[in-house]
Length: 237
Image (cartoon, rainbow, N blue to C red; front, top):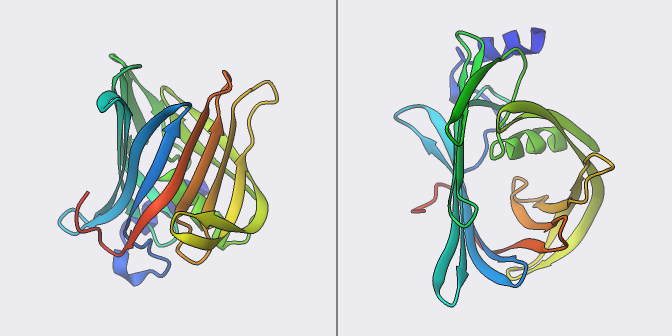
């Protein structure tokens, strides 16, 4: 509860008075899902009118030029000086595997409202909770603190779940853009889980996601590899 009160207090302070502000970006990726090719990008921008950050991600899965499936994610959050304070999250998948979900974070009433595929409900909001997109801001924060075991809670569909990541070390990563020093992390899952998720964040570029590699329980491989990076306010999405 103490951590939560500190977060609420920070909301009253000017955003620009703080250091460690996240830098806006646009990253485009070469992507694949098993034998299928995909297009993917993610961005971070600052909405000066509403004084909050907007993080977005989009993936398009194609076959013979046709769109099989698309995923759009949208996250809005405030910045309290060191970490993200989520406001709203939206996920929508069209085509194959169509589904949608959203989450709204109401700090005044300490309530986290969720909606998943037509079902809805609410949960008490008593500690910092992140979403699937702005959780990368929390990973960034803990990496800046030098942590090797990263832990926090994320709103996942209709419940809050603990997320844990192990820092495996730094390495020089070959990308379509050249070589970059990257922090290599792996998500720690239940021992019974057959899903493996690893990703690499750029050490010298505000921990941008350079590469993601995930092995699904059925053996299919999902990959993202950065092919274009624009730092500073993205010109377009």
